[in-house]
Amino acid sequence: MAQIRIALAQIDTCVGDLAGNADQVLTWTRSAVEAGADLVAFPEMTLTGYPIEDLALRDSFARAADRALHDVAERLVAEGLGEITVALGTLGRDSDDRATNQAVVIRGGTVLARYDKHHLPTYGVFDEFRIFSPGDEACVVQVAGRSVGLAICEDIWQDAGPVDSLAGAGLDLLLVLNGSPYEEGKGHVRSELAGRRAREVGAPVAYVNMVGGQDDLVFDGGSFVSDADGRVVASSPQFVEHLLVVDLAEDGRPGGGMVAAPLDSDAEVYSALVTGLRGYATKNGFTGVVLGLSGGIDSALAAAIAADALGGQNVVGVSMPSRHSSDHSRDDAADLARRIGADYRVQPVAPMVDAFEGQMDLPGIAGENLQARVRGVILMAVSNVEGQLVLATGNKSELAVGYSTIYGDAVGGFAPLKDVDKSRVWALARWRNQSALDAGELPPIPEASITKPPSAELRPGQVDTDSLPSYDLLDEVLDAYVEHAEGREELLARGFDPEVVDKVLSLVDRAEWKRRQYPPGPKVTALAFGRDRRLPVTSRWREPRGPVEE
Image (cartoon, rainbow, N blue to C red; front, side, top):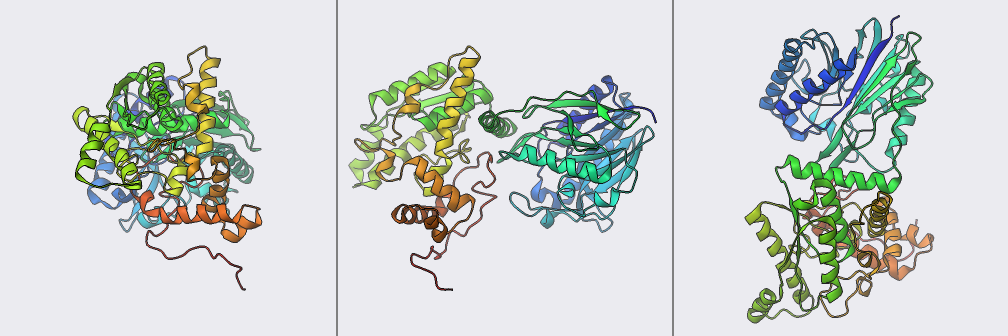
């Protein structure tokens, strides 16, 4: 058998942008042809974008997706690209006219084969079984005399699934189209899984994954090719569009492609946050962002992420000092803005707060919250006048315990740190500064913002630990209770202090209503607030305080 060349087009698509996504297919197919490829593969639901959620149920959208597919097939021929085999994902319809998650194979202006995804996940962020009808047939196509089997994402995660039926089919290659969202540590799980499937079918596996931000999901790419023994022999870098070109030799061995250097964990998470913010802003028509700069670590990290995502010149940072704001906080905010090249503005809140307090008696927490809400009004006003996206700068730890003011610092269209706990905020800030130093650049985050005790500065001398445990302890308890769903008994068995446990659990349980109203933010952990964790707002369940009788 002759050698063939395959290309994996790891691209960034947008849900609903059928014309734009189709143009990308043409552009990247042309690059694959120029690289001498016989086969180019695109990710899951490339034409429609992914996930399309209930757009799958609209006949008008299905018709438009079908027209886009036929347009792509015709344009490939018209532009001299008709000889290459193209595999891509789109919205399909089964024999009963129900929506399917479909892979199609195009060559010579004709759709040669269609494959409907068999396994439709309903866990975590996925809700596919509700909107799609499952397929039940395997698919093998011929490319330059080689047998290529098709699968879509979840199909390879299930044992005894459609891949199992291909084990005796004499495959030369298993091609998997994916829309696999990012979460920290997931990359090696994918490659190990693909390696098992490669050994099962006795053939190399080509795994192409999408890249980019889509609402609260981030897709990291990381496409790769495994040989028949399950070893990764070529891979794409994460978080960038990329064409991975690999030769399948006459003896069936893949080779010749690049192997991307892996990212360390902090670099990976930081890149995911940048990718998520960039995707959300640009795909929703925002060219810039606006956020409050308090001089603290959360707003500093959020601003650095925004500058890396959109350019510092497209970041507006507003310092909104009150009578309780310290001089060093204002100095740190100004220093940060200078370092990242942001448009820095100062808008004192005291006159506005005084006007409210002159009309209403707002003692204690009501007065503290008023300051935060006035700041929210200022940021939204700037956004309304100038068109920037407002960023909420709270982190996962604060969101977990409700340590934010609804309609105040919770105001925003996107929350880049929503799935990042406070301990990781500090780690990412240190990593970002060190990466700048390693590159001979000015670190974006002032050291004082990293080292100072965190404070909302809503009353004299206030620090976060006045009302919360230390963040390292808090994050340990939250990880057990939120991420791993451990109850009070399990937490006490771990050795946590009962008073700390009871306080944290009470705060988390009471804050569900706030979390429901918080803006979206990029998912980077295995369990993010929102799609991953769905609890009722109205609930009288509380963890038992005493011993439980069996």
